[in-house]
Image 1 (cartoon, rainbow, N blue to C red):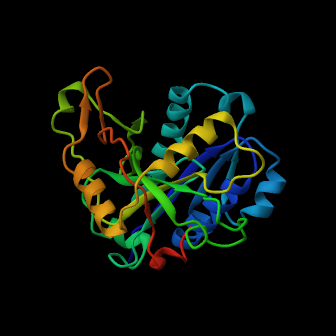
Image 2: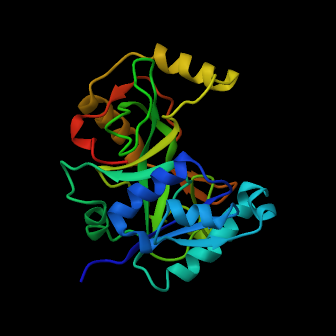
Length: 265
């Protein structure tokens, strides 16, 4: 019998990102194993995310700071961990995906792992000028330009209840130096914030896109090898917050997803 895996997110409105989060993770895990904390019109969410477990929350809860939101998600995570082997946690604009050349499914990644927490190699998917408007269906066949990011490389799943904080895991002070850090090869977290632009770019987004365009290009194999080598081995162990997370990694190159990822996202 296979592992039981679920995915959990929190969102305060109904938009394109939620539809892709649902479609991608539902295809990998089954819609019934998706848990969405939501403050919007639940009838609209049910129409877009049939079969998912949509949990109503007060909008005021979603407006609080990140630490309070994380604690709320921790409580739901603790309950889900009683019924599932792994609980995946991402923001709604993020999708967790595997390399089809290395794993036959997302679940297959987890079947090989014994660590208490998994961290994924993070990347920003970016819409460029020559891209056509986003259509229905998988994102990674329509948007392939990207940059690897230490900021997006974060803890994404845990076997047992954990304190997800600041893109890592908060641990007891005495465990800070020994808590396991594990980033499986071929496991990625894509941030879709810049993947589907609508309307005129804000000043902040325009600056981001300008910086992205200025990066030199590097083939996928070389770019992923460098990012994985830089981020997968020794994590940041931050005494001030008793936090274990991926190191800071400033992008130096942009790259492009191979075609084998085209059915994902």
